[in-house]
Image (cartoon, rainbow, N blue to C red):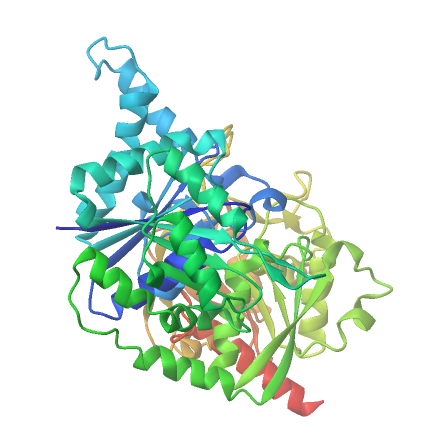
Length: 536
């Protein structure tokens, strides 16, 4: 029977519930178990697809095209699984489904209520991921913080799951803050006690308490927390900050979290095989080089907006023996007068995805600098479109070339709507989303990156495409189209021959990068940046 693990958080948000869930998932998978993960978010949006990056950060896209919370990226990177549409549920989606059911007569005239209709819909979703993936263990993170009014239907639903599957098949983990008073050096367990009391008041007794703290927790504090929160002493797990994110599973394992979970859920007793993960961490420790990558975008002060890109660069750096230093370049602040000076110290330049016209001209300047000064360039989604616009203006002589997204009046819309997108009114869930085939042209840089592969499948999230009316003209001027989608003859990649590394891809390769298996284009880009640094 499938085992269910629920991860909740208390005291404050941002304690690392997602990393805790992902780390435990990695450890359980290393035991040979099939693990699925999901997140339940209490906000009323249907999905995060139309939410501001300032509030939500990155939108992570799954293979089947679901726009999801960024924590799913952690799950995929740690557990090394491809998640799906059953991996992220919001309050908005719950009510949307329930109201549609009611309108269609599914409830036979019943009065629709939070209990049982809303909670039943949540439970259906929880059980669906187990059925779809055939998982031995399903790890579900509950977004928000205990005490939030909007989280209560989710908490009631997971309480009911525990009753339905039996407590030996269900485990509750509560992540909480154990602060240290700097002036006195005292470690305070009271916030944890109050948070657990709040959870108990909702009918949920946590089985494990994961304590976030900047300091090592001694045995006396752990025993106190165990006593006051009604858990076994070895079920108080220490979770401190680590220098590298991927050290988190090993830190949790020091507290024997896998052994405890194995006992409580009656899982196979074999220890996790961490050989591959340890080899990756060993490579990370041995990094003896440094390379500077300039990320030129408009959300450069928002780390979470480009989270998967940052992690993919980290993975590529580990396997190139280098620490990647990110130089955040605000594209809005780049101008003809300062762009060369601002970018001169970059070993490589990356222009990430995004929407809207803010900061676009600065990104075009960054692409021009990389092309003219032979600096390795990597354009992702919008970054590929930026490379095309810059090429159109500065090589093809189309001075007003632009994307329809940025300038409807441009006479040369080198980037335009996909077929069927004209007149579109709704913006949610209407893009090219999920994994699509990319046919790779032999002898190209893209082919070299992928080790000669003829076809790859990469994830997309965009509404505009390269305008094929310009393909022949740009090819004659030297632009190489290294990848195409054969089903719709869409451009997936552009590159410039004779340049050390200049490539743009329409997809988002960062979503499929793993710490022990870096995404090939990222790995090649960091290698090219290192080579460029040596030339300076």
